[in-house]
Each structure stands twice: as structure tokens, then as C-alpha cells.
Length: 498
Image (cartoon, rainbow, N blue to C red; front, side, top):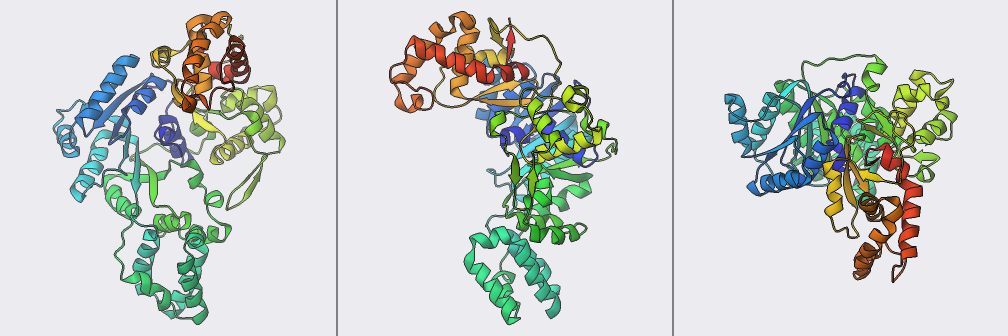
């Protein structure tokens, strides 16, 4: 999952809702903190996309703090604050109530590049405990294993020594079923496993792993966070919360049978062949409910890819999902046009004759398959805006007017998605021209930008289809982009009529 989306408030809350944890009401104020981030610009964009939130970037380096402050000032985003210090310093200020960090509803950390030592891990987890309010969510991305065989080494080391001969043989077969992804890429290990199963001598396989030092970051995290009042809520990559989608069919029952085992998350790591994790933990006590409207009615759901690119079937390692059923078709028709809530769909002609429970299940399937996204905003039907004089929405996005666009994609803040929205350089150029001059005169403003890009073949390759741009080129580019994308620009709050 795109890391720019994984730590957005709406997806974090959605994953928690899958575990019965009641989500915030739309528009309700919240606080959000992130530490050890690699891109201050992303936090500024996140703040611009969630105007009801107060955001805090806890930088370990002074240069990250300065970069974030400069970006926030340039974009005129006022609901984000950057602080700097070591983890232990943030913790000490929090414990002494001398810091500027208020109690948080969300606290996130991407630790993959940091290589924290044990005392720093302790400070991080204690900081999460001290800062997060009851029901607050801790998003934590980290490397769980240093090597590809890390999960396998850990499981063999933990389980094999306690097994008798019969149990060891059963364990070998379980490893074969669980490790389809791993053994597909490690043929030598796969051959040794088959030889051990055929010969009936488990030690032929275990010997390569029993003496190897191995740790499981996922197991260590559980041991550290549970005593601090945290309960695991799920994976930020929503698909990975569904074993029947993410894992091979042969592994499904084994994983389910391990659900109450203290090594359950490590078993999943091996099954999914992952070295990195992006956990979501909830700080107890927490309000839970089984009421579907309370859990999922506070989100809207949108599909940002073109309708023609939405597959008719989704085939995963675990199962195949047919999206040609009438409910899926009607949801996709509407959600590729604009983000909608469950109530919106039920009230729309497309939602006629479908039950709320069926709609919730269908939307959850589209989200789990990575087709739809849970979002912050709530679409309200209005008369069609006049595109003759559109303006970029919000100071963050209006900064595009001052930006020299190259061949790279552009990130804009969306108060509907509640996160950054990726826009192609081609569309960004058109939006920039519309903002500057309106539809009638946009081509004359766009042409000089295209001529500038034509001087750089690398930048121009993904944007221009002509060696020497002309006014006709600019006019056609505006026409194509407006026809293909303008509805979504308005629907996601990127553009609005003047």
C-alpha cells in the first residue's frame, strides 16, 4: 500500500472499524502526531486534506523540522506544527507535561530506516502509551525480519525443539503449505523440505535453522505493546487483513487454527512472506460496537481509477472474486464518478432493492481488493459547477500556480479523500492553466508551459505527443483532460467554481 495513504486518518479508522472499533463522527476535531517521518511535505499535505485536525510532526533531525515549516509556510497550511528532538526527549517532556504535544487520537511512526536500539524502542512505545487517548490508534511501520528467511528461522527455533517425531513431521507439512510464497523463491530450501518429508527425518531440514539466531519484530512488538494497554487492530494494508485473499488456499485453515496461538502474527508473516509490517494498534479502553452504520457509515468510499480500468474479476492467491454481479456494477458505476457513503448509495436509484448489509459487504470487498478507498469527506449532490472559471481549492493546492511542472506526478490535498491525491503531470498542467486563466483562455496559458517542457525530452516524453507543441496541441490537451477528469477534480475537492 502507498505509504502516503497508509497513515491517513480515514484508512486507519477504517481498519479499526473492521475490528468493531467505533470511528469518529465526520467533522469531529482530532489530533495527529507522526515521528521519524522521511517526508515532511506529506504531513503538510495530510494536514491540508484534514482541516478539522491538528497535526504534529516530531522530527528527529533539525533539517526535517525546517523543511516542514518552510513547506507549511509556503503552502499557507496553519494546522500543522513541527517539533524536533530525540525520542527520549519527547517522552520526558510528555511525562513532565512540559512539551507542546497534546493528547493524540492518532500517532504514527515509520521506523524502517532508523535501526532503533532497545532503549529507543522502549521510548517510542512509551511515547505512544503516554500520548494516545483511549481509543487512539498507533500506526507503526517497521522491519520485522532482517533476512528473507527470518520468519521461518523464528518459527523453527521456537517450535521444533518441543516436538516429538510425529509432531515434527506434521510441522514440516504445515511449513510446506504455509510457505508457498517463500519456497517459490527459494528452491534449494524447498528441495530440502521435500527430502526431509520423504525420508521422514525432520532434522534434515531443521538443522539449517535451529542454530540460527532469529527474532520476530512482530512478536517483540506484541510483547512490548500489550502490557502498555494496546490491542492489535489490523494491518494498514487492508487486503492483508483477509487471509482468504492474501494467502494461498492451502494455508487458510492452518492460519485460522493458529488464531489463538501466541505466534499467530509470526505465522502470518511467514505465510505472506513479508519482512516489513505496517501495524495498527488501538489504545485501550476502547468503545466497540456491532452496529454496522456506526462502524462504517462515517466514511465515504471512492474509486479513483477510470471505470474502464476496474477489473471484472479479481484473482488473488487465495480466491477469485467476481465483480460482475449487479450490486458491484452499480457501486462501481457511482463510485468511479464520485465518492459516496453507504446511505448515499441506498438513497440513489442505483441502490434500489439492495439491503444495507449487502451494500456494506460489497463495499468492504471492493476496499479489500484495493479497488475502492475509505475516505474522509461526504459527497453532497449539487447543481453542476460552472467549469468556465474554476479555481484550485485550498492554499496547499493553489501553490501549484507557482510550480514549474515537469514530467513527475503531482500530489494535491483532497478534503474529500482526507489524503493526498495523485495527479498526472498532464492533468496538473491543465489544472494550472484553468486556475490561471479560466477555460476560455487556458490554451494560451498552457502553450508556453508545453514549449518549455519540449526543450527537455525526458520531462516531455510522458506529457507531449508532439515534438513542437502548437495552440491546437494545447487546446486538445485541455479538452481531453477536462472530459476525462474534471468530474473527479470537482468531486474530490481539488477544483471549485470561482
